[in-house]
Image (cartoon, rainbow, N blue to C red; front, side, top):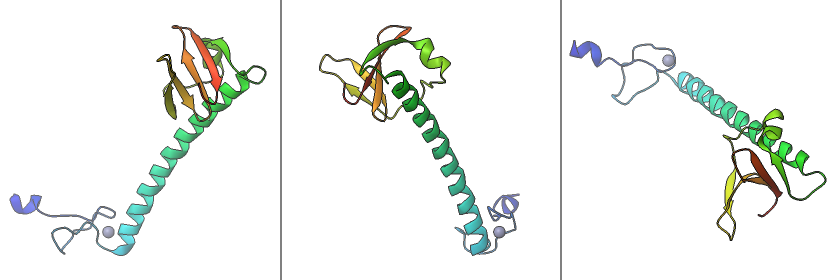
Length: 122
Ligand SMILES: [Zn+2]
């Protein structure tokens, strides 16, 4: 049983490995295919996150087309598809208020349904 468990298989094609104990792939081709697929998956996740961040930024920018700063109800952001789970960074104002940013646009939550949107620094 121990012998069976100690068998190792190529991570890409699952062929039985017969080389060194730290061998993970049967060939350079399998290693490259495995690594390329993992890299492509990571890149896809990064693109998806960036798409959400850019969309958030564009929603905030759209709401600030006329005024530099303004209050809006949270529902206005939600209707436009704002995703509150994604942000690029936060900034703490001198008064201690913590602004949440998507790139150069940010907001401060004033209450459970009221948002204060700003551009640049808070
Ligand atoms: Zn292989």
